[in-house]
Length: 215
Ligand code: NI
Image (cartoon, rainbow, N blue to C red):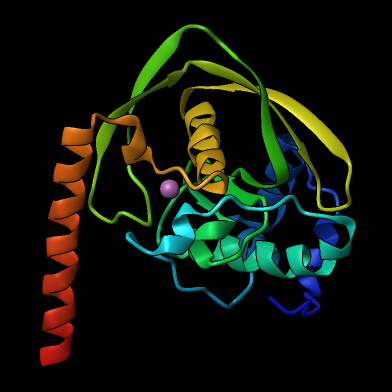
């Protein structure tokens, strides 16, 4: 991704905390706020069985700053348009350890951009939640994961951050970090269930492609 300058996004060299986002949203409204932080340009999302979804992404290094600042607003635009609550760089064909997510509500957006996120602690207690994925459209399944995690990442300006997360946010972070390691949510299911779901999806995508060809 070329390092195209993105004027509006410069405001978020350091990602604002939830309270700051909420203040901005209260001031300008949800739609205008989101327009400020995302690009007009959406990117195509890779679908299984694209082999790029199975690669391990590489850490963002100092020289990647421009690429990351160009990519993040496009990833946010792609995620919101899908619509989805999380997107990892490998899903749009990038090999960088970068994720975007928003587990806030429709009227209370909580966009986050996480560079080099890593789980530094996970609870022994597990939780189960239904997951889906923009790279596996239409597939949903209950997935078991640690209930609570401690996450470390870098801001766009390199500042180190840490937080604990559980519930939907904790699941979303774990799901997106899996993508950076070439892991999909169906990998957490039994081989039988996974193969059944993937076969079903392959059939649907084939039908869709045939319909599109016929038009
Ligand atoms: Ni996903």
